Structure formats: C-alpha cells, structure tokens
Image 1 (cartoon, rainbow, N blue to C red):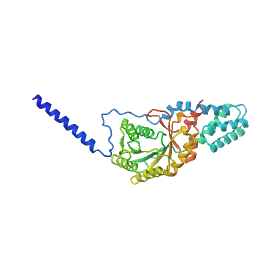
Image 2 (tube, one colour; image 1 turned 90 degrees about the vertical axis):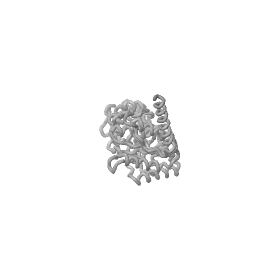
Image 3 (tube, rainbow, N blue to C red; image 1 turned 90 degrees about the horizontal axis):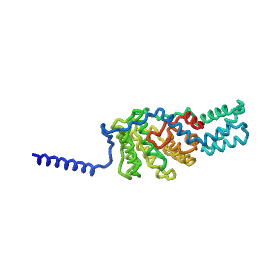
Length: 350
C-alpha cells in the first residue's frame, strides 16, 4: 500500500515537471499575468502629500540657489552690481537667458515702483516673480478618462534619464489612486529594462506585457494596449527604448510606436523624462522629442541631485508644456506630482 502511494506521488511529480517544461518551451511572447491574490503586495503611498513630504529634500538640493538669490535681493542697496549678480545666479541655475531677463526686469520694476527697502519685502517680491515664471496656473494633471478606457501613456526619453524607473514609480502612483494599470515593456533592446519593469509591476500587482529581446517595440506596445482592453485596465503605461535624439532612425521608430498604438486607442499623454542634472543638454532633447511625438508633459528626475532648479522654467518654455512630475530620491515612492507653490517655497526656504 505504501509503495503504491509513493509511486503515485512520484508519477504526479513527473507530470508536473513535464507540464512546466512544455509551458516553458512553448512560451513565445509573454502575456500579462498578475500576481496571485495570496501574494503579499506592496501598498504604494497615495499621491496627496508626496511633494510636501519631500519638500525638505528639495529645499536641501536647491539651498545653494536659494541662498544666492536671497543674499543678493536682501542687500541694503540694490545697485547695478547687485542686479548683475542676480542674473549670474539665475543663469547658473539653468533658468535660461529669456526667463532670467524677465525675472530681473520684473523685480527691478517692483522694487522701484513699490519702494521696496527691507529684506522681507524683497524676499516676497522674489517669491512672487519666481512663482509667476514657474506658472501655477498650468494644468499639470494627467489627462485620463477623456476617452474609452484604457488611456495610454507613452513614456519617452534618452538613455540614462531614469525612464524605466519613472514608469514603475508612475504605476505605483496610479495604483495608489485606485487605478488598474498594465505595463508595456517596449524597450526591447535591453532585456534588463523589461525585467526591471516587470519587477516594478509585480510589487504592486500590475501586469506587464513584454516580448523577446530585440523584438519589434511597436508590436509589444500594440499587445500591451490590447491586453489593457481585454483586462479592463484604466491605464496602459508604455516604456520605450532610450532614444538618442541625434539618431534619426531611432526617432522615426518612436513615431511608429505611437502610430501603431493609435490603431486601437489614442495616446492620452506623452511624457518626456529628463534628467535635471543634464542642464541645457536637456533642452535640446526636449525640442527634438517634441517634434517627433508631441510631448504633453515633462518628468524631471534627479531634481534633488542638482542646485539647477531653473531647468523647471527653461524646459517648460522650450517645449510649451508643463512639468507634471518630479523625481526627488531613490525610493519607490519618490515620484511626486509637481506643485509650483511648493517648489518656489522650497527654493527660498534657506
């Protein structure tokens, strides 16, 4: 009797291994499979309050700029030398020539008209002028829910900007809002990118569609949208390969990805990820991507790693679209919706 039971168990084990081996050998393009219900999933932080929580980190990174601006504007006498120093400080922060001239001229006019003499009033004038440049009236929300679900968000950018990490963090943010998400790993040139994205998804129960290495990115993006429709997702986030903006062929391919997606659903948002530490080089990237895929929003990563916060204004001016999210650290929930008021307050906190 015991031997019969042992034989039955052995036979069952062989059958399980055989079925698993067949599944492995016959698997082609991977379909989205969400983690089972009994798996322990992480609960992402809700979006509200993220930038407030990270305000001190932002203030620390921008302290050099903030102190420099306040040191100049708080001088007993604002002469030509002081205004030149203010210009140099702003230009060093990558604000750009045009916005710098606007800010300095607005400040000079206000100081002259209102007769600003004390440092408190000067700081208030600087705050107001900076806030006007950053523009608190821009619509920085993701435009979701305006068409038939799922909404498609295409994420683009050059190598090394933190694009795949941004997609993973954005998925967490959307899950925190209660939205159903499918990820599309259309960066098929790096197997590590698809693995990385799938790991991000697994941690919060988000499905990932991926293909074999070097497969057609547009095909993977198409299948991701198809899966989103099939599974009733609210949003499909499509990660793309890190395009070199000087390579016309790769940029053309990115345009193809967008066109193929739109055979099923319109692209609701195209988010361009820019490394804030790259400075003016990011402006060139922004311009070229804007010409190819009609960028609708900017994600600035590593903003906590640079004192050049002026890039927020410069990139908005270059592309004519708002900064919608900022990356302020290495943690999984260190992506925050951008808030102009919080940003300027952090800038001048020191």
